[in-house]
Amino acid sequence: MNRKSAPPLIGTASASVAVGLPVYNGEPYLSTALASLREQRDVDFELWIGDNCSTDGTEEICREAARQDDRIRYRRRERNLGSTGNHNRLVHEAKGRYFTWAAADDAYEPDRLRKMVEALADRPDAVLSFTSARQIDSAGQTVGHWDNPCRTDHRDPVVRIRDLVGMEHENYHCYGLYRRDVLARTHLLPPVKNNDRILIAELALYGRFVEIREELLLHRLHDQRLTQSVSQRDWYRTQRTDGKRLVMPNVEEAGWYLKAIAGAPLRRRERVLALLALRPWIRENAAPMAHNVVRAAVDGARIAASALRK
Image 1 (cartoon, rainbow, N blue to C red):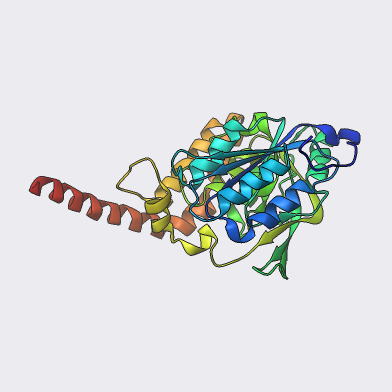
Image 2: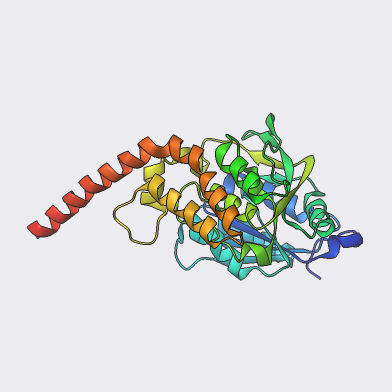
């Protein structure tokens, strides 16, 4: 069989896991990421790669890995779907009881998947398991550490969303392991730049998160990361595929938070309190939202004037 040999499955780690790896021109770190995923121990998983029409050596690296390991499913997109579209397509394509996104520039310690599966198996009330992280640079050297500061295991969903929205933190929760059936009930990643924060806040309304305080994720910090190399407005210009010409980034993000709360399985009182939990975010983004509206009005006037001249 065309597959890297692995130790026998043990305990609850034999659950079916789908790893979705969206990539676009990921050649610099992709081989390292794939090697760390293939070396995951004592866990039954498949790796689904969505290649967003890469123009570097990504396709060759992925096809070679797929030839060597029959757990790998490689798909080159028919067109560039944008980062959000590629992430969400993988959720629909991949099969498995559990799902996780992997980044083409990150790496895993060998027991990460197994421990996240076991954590969810031991906690039927939890919808997501995640680990602490070690931050590495482009050369793989340690430059920092991440532990979860939010009360994501609190029994009250309002407390969970209040912390996730109101506290300043890095959102490494999004690299955790999801119960796929619960993830499918959310809006997934909406077409806005900070979509991972919106998804995690929405997911926290469905259930508690279970945390593994071990640095099993190696999260790479480098200048070419999409979130660092593209401004918020340029993200909309380059990543959106819905054809909208007028964009109001912060206003749209607020709308998605409202949709998340409206669709979550909450009692009426919880829904009201969850809406009130957005106040810190709204205060922080009030000025940018006003600027968005003004700029959209100016852009709309220019578009209208241009149309009239034709």
